Length: 67
Image (cartoon, rainbow, N blue to C red; front, top):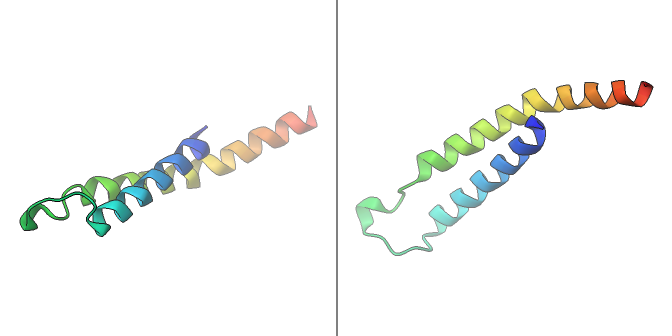
């Protein structure tokens, strides 16, 4: 479950970074990169969740395949 949610968080974080960087929403110049920290934090948390969750998911699937 962590691997799946991590993949979703990583994907959404990257999409947010692309949208912020492309400047799709009109904002004043000082606030141009607003939300970048949250997008990066979501991406990093998603990657960490995938790294931790993927091996656990694989072990569970292997146990279920044996039984």
